[in-house]
Image (cartoon, rainbow, N blue to C red; front, side):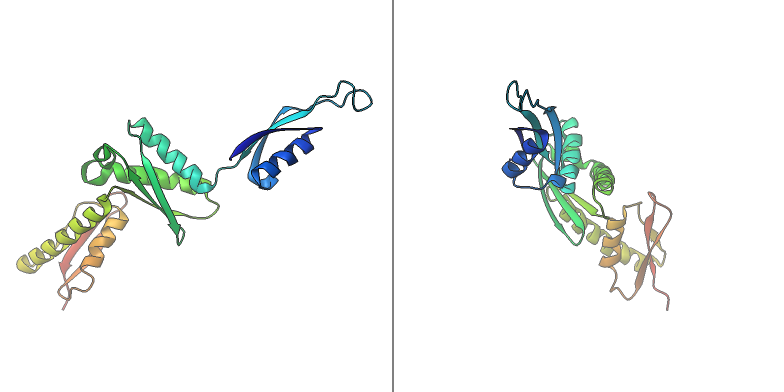
Length: 207
């Protein structure tokens, strides 16, 4: 139960009744007074009970998920949202039909959704909470594709002796490229440019 309507001899009594039903404390709820009630003559004649509607406040994660669900539904998709939280990171996975619509070309729509969801988290959480949004198994497939790309381009750099600039990527995708070649002794990677057009450069390691 997340909300209830309760009555009592006065507003305080009605609220306390609602808190008992919801098994929570006053700071965790939103209270709407529907009727303040009436004491009546001598406390009895013409008395009218107070009526309140009490609703549990949404947690930050519930607010973020509601925000994301609303956006996706406006795109014509009915999403299933799975989440887990650890190390101040909210991992959200979207399931359902028509998922390619939510991914977009090279994940551009997905990245935009993640950006908007991060803004929502910044608003609703009392502390900084990082958001990682995934749709189906796209992130895993993208990581595998970027790792293969890093290996192929590093071979090209070794063959030609010239650096290679990759297309602009969000920070977590750049990290995949850096990690894929971190232990490569013959090439180095570094980032250049400004967000959102920051990109990775693969170059020969200095000898």
